[in-house]
Length: 242
Image (cartoon, rainbow, N blue to C red; front, side):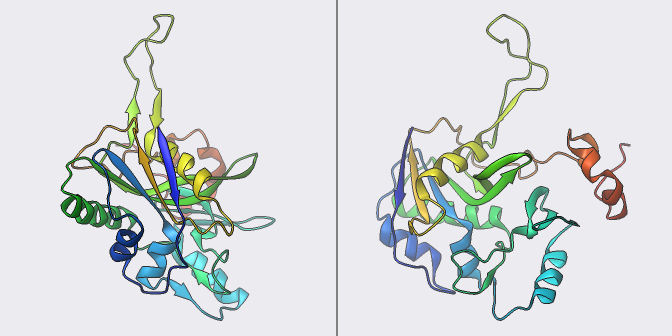
């Protein structure tokens, strides 16, 4: 697998995203995966707040969340089926502003895929919109896919045999998040100014349609479910099995 991070100028608020990407990536090869940080998607959509007080920020986080729990440093939240800090509301690299997550990263990924498939006259193209996440009891942040298009997000091993001939019962690999993590390592989180990356020779299985729910686990079925169980019931997160 080959990952190349793309250094760019600073993206401007409400700037056209496809043309910006096209300028730095005039050619995209067949079988590539285009990676775009969610921050420039949000800037293109105008998902920015100016001069927000701490109280107003708390209201924004709650409004953006399906679940919120105050912790020592941030609000622990669930948004779009993912656990994250502060519902993704971010102040880093924002020039004093608050940047919210994109409205619908899966739709954005699909639009970008369609645009660059036609422009480059290619059939197989993946697109990932990335963000950063922390993991329970682990220091540091990693990349995650908050939206993607053009490939299967999960690789399922269920029913296959391990190296000793025993069948897998539950194992799945999250291809979308794994590719996002690898790309974000190259793109950086500070002043690298690499909001784009291109991945070639990827193990992804390309597909015309994706199931945007394939990576989401109901809180009631998740191994971390007990952490959210009490408050989650009050917000309708835990769905009863029929």
